[in-house]
Amino acid sequence: MIERFLHHVRVEWPSASETAAEARVRLADKFPRTALRRMTHLGLLIGAALAGESLAPDDALVFASTFAETRALEDFLASFPAASPLLFQTSIHPGGVQQVLIGRQQPIARLWPLAGRARLVEQALLTALLEPAARVALVGGEERGTWMLEHHMASATSFAFAAILTRDADGAVGRVTFTSVTSGFVAPALAGSGEPCPALDIFAHALAERRPLQWLGAGGPWQLAWR
Image (cartoon, rainbow, N blue to C red; front, side):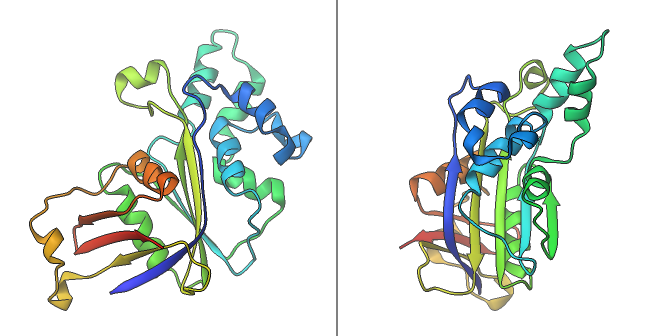
């Protein structure tokens, strides 16, 4: 079994109608004014989720998103035929989590950006558990799409989460564990459950509500538990 303990768990779940412009007003006090103008909605939400938590040069960060800055791309395409230079800059700007690190001038040891769908949460957690750094920031999120949502190329909701994972149980609020089936043990409650790996938004809800999760993954059972 491998495990990490959760610290600093924070989830940003704005109203369903919030735009990037509205988020800039709501979260203005959390960012340098010079950085606000070019930040995407997802970048703003990630920055808010990481607010109050300092990363160190020896820390690593795992970032998970299925669609990333889809809304920024939508807005740029909608500006045609008179393409907006500002929206173009936003659409090719570094990803949300990079926007936050650049704004903070924060070096870290390693950044693991992951994209996927069915097993994205599992892949992100496994990356965090196997990362050699003592502290790993697990960050994820999406920004709500509009017309690209109809083509299944965007998220239906905007959200972001951040958690610091360490091997230190002191002060932890939760724990995530993975048990490889090669160990010969599969939790009885999971063996016949058929529970799938949770989608990224379901995982974010579980973090926000401090709700336990368990599922049988590709290599063995996973469990998210709270203290």
